[in-house]
Length: 241
Image 1 (tube, helix red, strand yellow):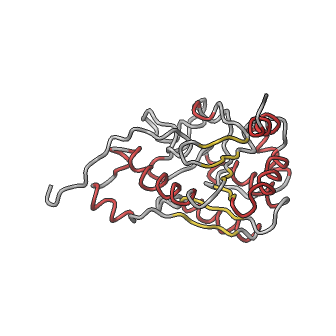
Image 2 (cartoon, helix red, strand yellow):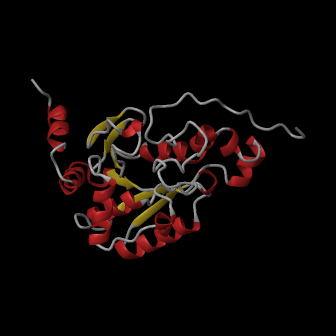
Image 3 (cartoon, rainbow, N blue to C red):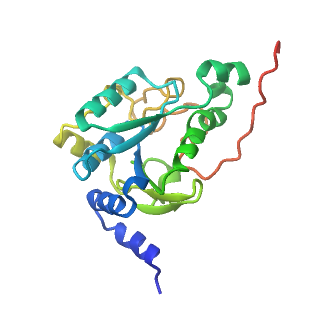
């Protein structure tokens, strides 16, 4: 006999993003918030959610290395949607990280840099919630291919809700244009996926949309949507080394 949780998961696969979000807000109240990196999918999700719930609670991981255009979009989104935006920041500012781990950690060990600047701040935040909402889509990366619209996040120990899991990039852009949703102008300059300045470049014609993230490395995810990775730690830099 199918359990209640499995039944909800199964039913949710037939739901629209609006229905998934309505379920999330009804089920978790203030215990669920939207995580956004302010990519085009994130902006579409915020727009959809704003039509269902007032005073949206949104958080973002501010690594200190984001593009100027991303920061400007955050301000635009706050004004348009009246967001209660919380910026999660790493314990180490960029200067402190360079002093402890050496310069350009993102080049020598990008997994550890992402862990310090993204994963750990997120982990602390998610420890205060019962569920979190993301804008990931199944066709973005191999790691996201099996994402359910409602699933248990074993890495962080709470429910994870992915209302746009079955949308294509074309569906996202059609929604954004139809509703005049603000988006990052870098998307129009060859940046389909936008992260930190040091680890993001424009993609070339014919390249995979994620080719501009950590270019030249066997890496397509920052770690937020992966099982806990086995990181190769870089020891703190020794004074005078």
